[in-house]
Image (cartoon, rainbow, N blue to C red; front, side):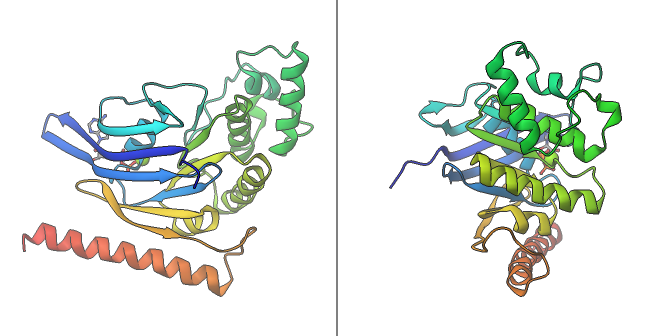
Length: 258
Ligand code: ADP
Ligand code: MG
């Protein structure tokens, strides 16, 4: 058996706040295989962003183990791409220059890779456009291309389509699956949308809050591309939904002090 690409063992994370200690993650363990598409879902405040930031190396104050490949995650780096809810583009740079970022388009290898990525994210013809001329979905595709230019070992996405309208969002999910199938980049995608989690994932990691921990992991064996209207899709959707309802029941028991 091949070694997992990402290994997380007994991860614990607390925040010291004015109101006391917040236990954001408790004993989280997860292995992710190379090329796998993982979605992470759970109620607000259950530690999804915290988990992603630790994997990204943006937060290194944790207990437990986090390894990418053979290396301990000690800080951010080009091997870990990160996509936020908003695209965070440079407004004064064109699409192609945003994608190249600090690499020079005068380098033929960079130029070739940038144009390949522009095609991959379906932005051909918009190379010289500025971010203000793009729709929200197009801007997010620029951000994805920019992250992929560095050939990251893993692409981490924190509710990347959360600000988009429902139709654009569905389209972006299809585009992302196409990118993933062609590029084979390992993806860890945080969402609180059940349809999105089922549509994209090989496995869905369901988190529960207080403290943030893994409630269960649901494998999704549906072939790609998927259709949300099929009965097999709906069956999985109900399965995830019922796990959510169990979390809510536990929450009610917790708060009633039983
Ligand atoms: P999610 O992304 O699932 O909504 P987060 O990972 O952002 O949740 O937060 C998990 C918990 O940790 C929440 O209770 C949140 O209030 C707390 N938290 C997150 N970041 C900080 C921080 N920088 N300082 C204090 N508490 C934080
Ligand atoms: Mg979050």
